[in-house]
Every structure is written in C-alpha cells, then in structure tokens.
Amino acid sequence: MGKKVDVKKVNEKKDEIMKKGGKTFSEFKKFIAKGNVMDLAVGVIIGSAFGKIVSSIVDDILMPLIGIIIGGIDFTNLSVKIGEATITYGTFIQNVIDFLIISVCIFFIVKIMKKLTRKVEEQQVEEPAKDPNTALLEEIRDLLKEKQKV
Image: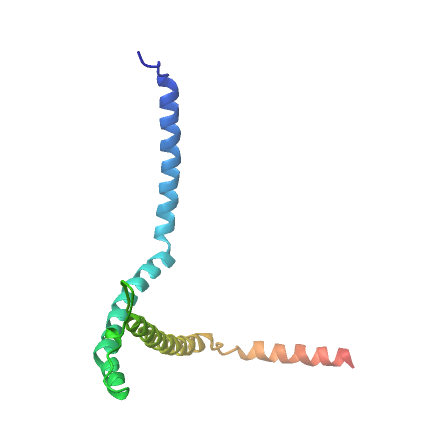
C-alpha cells in the first residue's frame, strides 16, 4: 500500500503557500497601481501605434522615393543565395532604415515635449510678488551684513 500522509503537515504547508501567495498578490497590486506602470503601459500602446504610422511612411512614401533615387532598387527584394540558404539582406536594410526614421521622429517628439514642459515649468516657477515690508527688511539685512564685513 501507499505511504501514510500526515494531514496536519499538508495543511500547514498549504496555509504557508496561501500566505506567501497572498503577500505576493498584494505586492503585485501595489506595483500595478503605481502611476509609472500605467504610464509605461500607455506609452507602449501609443508607441506601437506610432510605429505603424512611421512604418507606413517608410514603406509607402520614403522607400519608393529612395528606390527612384538609387535607380529603382527595391530593398526588400535584395537577397543572395548561398547553397540552400537565402539571405535577404534587403529586409535588413529596410529595417535599419525604419529604425533610423523612427528614432529621428521620436527624437523630435521628445525635443518638442521638453520645450513645452520647460515653458510650463517656467510659468509655474515665477516667484510671487514680495510684500513691500519683507523686501525692505531683506534690504536692511543685506546692508547690515555688508557693514559687518567692513
């Protein structure tokens, strides 16, 4: 027959696992509720949509123009056959160009966003007007400091 199972030990182990699992789930809820995680999720979704737009610009507008400039070569069809293997290096060239264009677009978007946020921060940082009495007291304080140095 089979081994005798200690039900008490099994229940203790089960309670320990449930306790650890509950703690892990609680930590996960805190992690997922943080603003940074949500911002990242939104960024990834918008980034993938933006990637599709840029890929369309590259595939449908820029690459045909580049193809005309270099004599009608379609990069995606460039390949070399070595033995049984076909190396489609044209697809690689296309992907490198896609990456460079996407990088340039993101660079300019980030640059524009920095400029906009800098303007907003500058507007928020403007010092409120001082009370005339406070300004006078600060002037007196500065004059007294200068006299003590002499």
